Image (cartoon, rainbow, N blue to C red; front, side, top):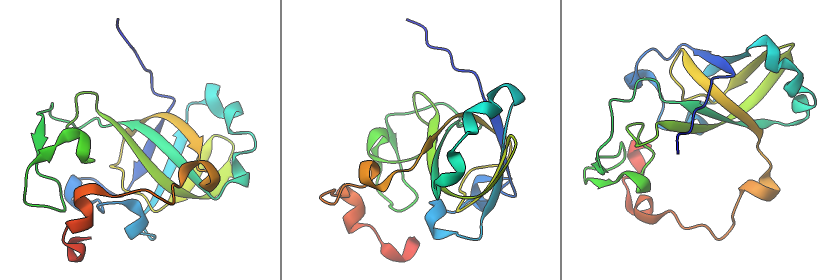
Length: 150
């Protein structure tokens, strides 16, 4: 089976290199971005302005291929790729929660961004705390990670 996705837009940020990006956008509220949907998808933004946060799903266009083990940014120990959020994955798909600032036609202004400039956008979903937050979630090896690195 072959699965093919096509970008629905492009994400523009000031983050040119992975070293410029915060580990997670929530730690960089000042990190701004612009999400521009291709015109044929603009109608899908109806009612999105009612949400404070969105989930952006995108293609890690700078991924270098994958290996089963990788050192995460918050640890010095190699971990399984499915237990970390590294961009070098079998299917280089990224997700980020961003704060929505404004909507103008096919353009979203967002902040709390950890996405590199020029990243192809695959989808947008509303962030709904009632659905997306789990009060009993456990954070695995991250619970022991050096919190000062965050």
